[in-house]
Amino acid sequence: MKNKKDEQKIISLFDEFKSLILEEVSKDKRYIQIVDLLNSAIKRVENVAQTPELQARAVFQNVHTICLVDKIKLSAEEADILNKIDQFSHSKGIWGEMNTLGISNMWISK
Image (cartoon, rainbow, N blue to C red; front, side):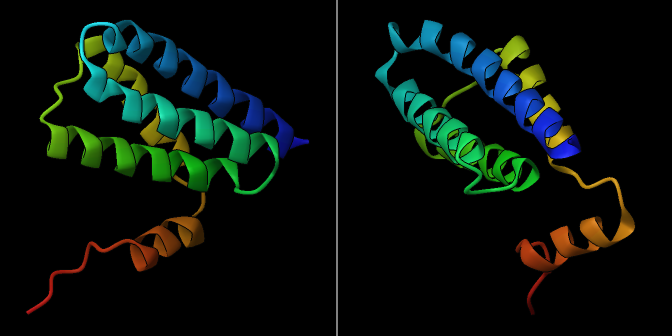
């Protein structure tokens, strides 16, 4: 049942982050991409199309990309929730973390 608990936890974090971002959408339309991303992530987790951890990792990386490209600066509260999403995305075991290093583009190329 751990997976169901993880699904509920990450969906709760996504919803909390989305509620903060929705406040910004009325002021700045660039934030709508983040809302769309979060809606898509919630659907994927609910439909078991993606594990909660992998979806959290994807959201974390994509939000950072959107913020970089669109020059969006998150508030301290928004950044705190995004950090919680990042912490959730990390596997608790060594092999999960090794897999994270293996699938991400973190290695320096020469």
